[in-house]
Amino acid sequence: MRFDGWIAGVGTSSGTRIVLGHWQRSPFGPFSDVMLERADGQRLLLAPTRETADFVSETYAFDAVRVTPVCVRVAGATWTVAAGSLELRFVTGRRGLLGLLLRAVPGALARSPAWSALIDRPARLLLPGVRTRGRGPSGRRAWYGARDLWPIRTASGSFEGHGLGTPAPVAPPVRFGFGSVPREPAVTRVTTTVAPAHRRTAAASTSTRTACPGSPPAVL
Image 1 (cartoon, one colour):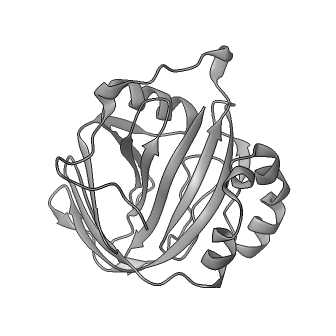
Image 2: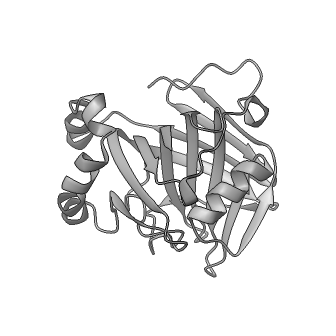
């Protein structure tokens, strides 16, 4: 089961850490989801449909799951996210050396689980907390093939009516699965491959499409 899109990870001075998945192609059609960990350690999933919520919560670990529309707009370097009581806006900067190196990796190679397994150890050394392969709490296997990376320069927002504060490192690392996102806030273009449970393959579904009306696809 292959998911092509973007993962954004950002910490905040309030202690809340947020991981956004923005998937242009997936077995469920295009959709976005948010994994959020509060300062007290509570892990929350915000997903647009029961189908996507069930799949993500079977792959990673959460203390609570909410099914709610997740709307993502991308205009140039500015990302705007609305998901239930979460409002988030962040702006990316110019890609650095690591982004340039990842961009040079051929797409076919980046999508290969074998490549993800090969670069897992270098990724751990270069970006502590990051892993490119592993097993989630349920035992389901996953591989991540990064293809680009942009730093997040500014971020602001609120959750449940409370301001999130200023952007901060993703520290401590989030605890949804076997690895975290880069410590420094960033957006990573990634291909995620997930081994299906019990040989089951999800059928593509247009009902899970949650892109904002009139919003262009994210092309960075």
